[in-house]
Image (cartoon, rainbow, N blue to C red):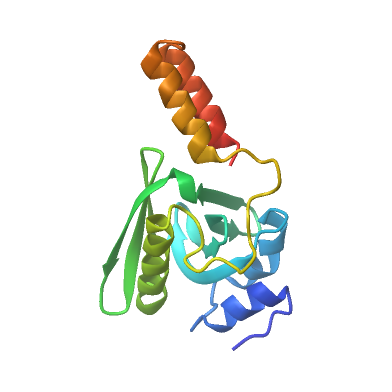
Length: 180
């Protein structure tokens, strides 16, 4: 197995891959697309759109990265936008289907063991409301940061009482969710 020496979290996830064929460049380039404080929990290879690339499950979102010589592709799926996940496995490969924001993304030719593990971990993440399945000890929201659930609840109450219109409700709700 190849050694990458990119970052400890990425190296640990890459070490679990059975085959890195077609994704070595993506593993090297992954830190360029990660947000500050974002860590990689799991990796898988697959085909999405026009090419073979890397699927990265982080503590904040699911990312598909293809970094070719002539083209690059990055698509991310923040957990709060994912409504469901499907896994369909064959003998060796399978397809991971992610339903997010009313769209359907099919990541094909994912090795069966990686895809099943990724789908299971993603389902657990979604069931936990987007939070890590096992949150780190002492982790909490930043001081003074309003709780998203309470902001949405207040917004629902404002709409129910007639204080805001349905259009204002949709706009404000979208802004709250985009701030995540």
